Image (cartoon, rainbow, N blue to C red; front, side, top):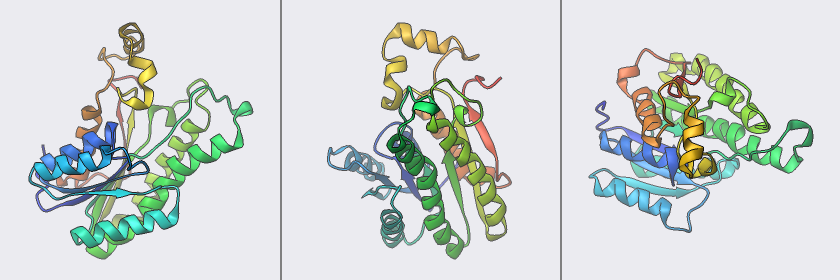
Length: 252
């Protein structure tokens, strides 16, 4: 993995799944890592921070609702105060709900999904982006999805929020390039997380889902984390505004 020694990272949605895997891989590559999540009372968020600390890096757990500007500003301030700056931001926080055809989507579901996924990613980019500009640069990695590129049946506002993240990424990449901040996005396919456990929990269901993937398997969280760490590192120093499918070839 790339050498991230001396880098300071913040991962939202870091309590589990892709966020947890990314946080641990960043720490394993030498970075100090803060993990943030809206859920902090079950011990899992603190557990990730402890794993980071046990690896020899500085770990920090922060409770934040990314859909709330005040929470995001407080999070950025807390992490900056603890680490002295932020060099890497990975926006993994997100929610979804299956079975939401757009004509039947309740307003509260639309608001929750779009506010968390799209608005939340924007708010984090805005607050942490300012920290990065003041510090001379950095790397932002946003989590989009294959359904942000291609529509999926009954995905509803989830796919729309993920498509918005792609344009947000491109706009920010254009605006921040001259200030040393790179902004890229990942577009995973189906990843084996609690987020979509119903798709892969039973072996027959997993086999059915994997049948549509050219590489023949669903993604593990670490597959996405490895791509995030690459984008965060100097190995990707000449890449900004990119959207990378990490889907086992599903998009083709």
